[in-house]
Length: 294
Image (cartoon, rainbow, N blue to C red; front, side):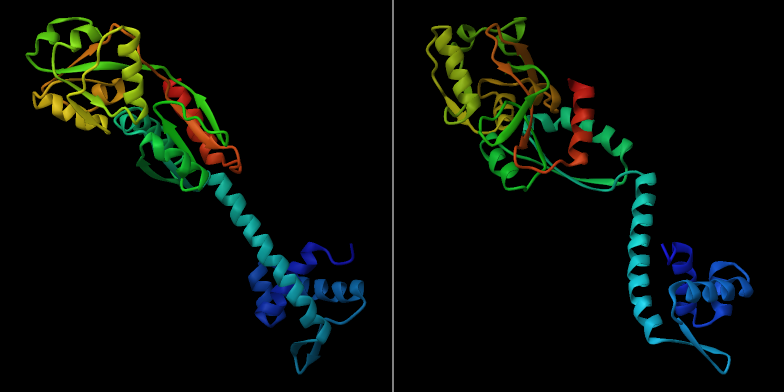
C-alpha cells in the first residue's frame, strides 16, 4: 500500500488548514514532522501534491483530485467512528409497538419500564389495537411488534405464546354472586349478562363455553371492548365475563372479580411478520417481556 492512512490524514490536514503550520496545530505535531510526511508521501506516490510559491502551498491538479477521494474516505471514517461511539453508549432508534387493550394495564407497561431503564436511548411508540386490526398493522409495517391477548391466525404472521391467562367473571359490589368463591356459567344465566359481540373472538369463546356446559346463553347487552363491559357492570347493569388482565389490572372500584368454574383460556402472544427484517429492538423487548411474564 503506497498511500497509508497516516499519510492521508496528514495530507488532508494540510489541504484543510492551507499550510504546514495549520496542519501541525490540527494534528498536535511539529511543523517539521508534517513537512517530512508530505515530502515522503510525494516521493512514495511519484507525483507532487503541492507547488511551493512564495512560501505558500498551492495544491497541484493531482493533489486536488486526490483530496476529493481522501476527504470522502475521511467522512466515511467519521461516520464509522460515530457509530462505534453510539454502540459504546447503547443502541438507539425507535420501537413501534402495539398491544391488546387488556395488556396495557400492567403486562406491557412493566415490560416497557424495564426496557426504557435498560435501553434509555431507544424510543417507543406505543398504542393499543383490537385483535381484528393487528394483522394489518404488523404486515403493513405500521408496528414492529404486537403483543396480543390471544394468538392470531394468519399464514404470514409469526406467533409465539409466552404466558397463560383466563377469562373471569366480574360483578358489582354487593351482588349475590360476590359471595361465591367460584362462579359457573349456570350461575350467570340467572342475572343480566353483558357479553362481547359474537363477531369477535372473545364473544365466540364465551358462546363456546356456554354450549360446552349445555347452558342457554341470552345476551342482554353486547360490547366490543372489555373496559366498557367493566364500566357497565360497575354501574349495576349486570355481570360480565372478561379477560383477567383488564379485570385485575384496571382501576375498577365497586367491582368484584371471581374465577369461572369453566376455564376459558387466554394465551398472550408475541406477533411479528414473517417478512419483517430482523430488528434488534424487537428481540430486546421480547427478551424482557418473557423474563417478566414468561
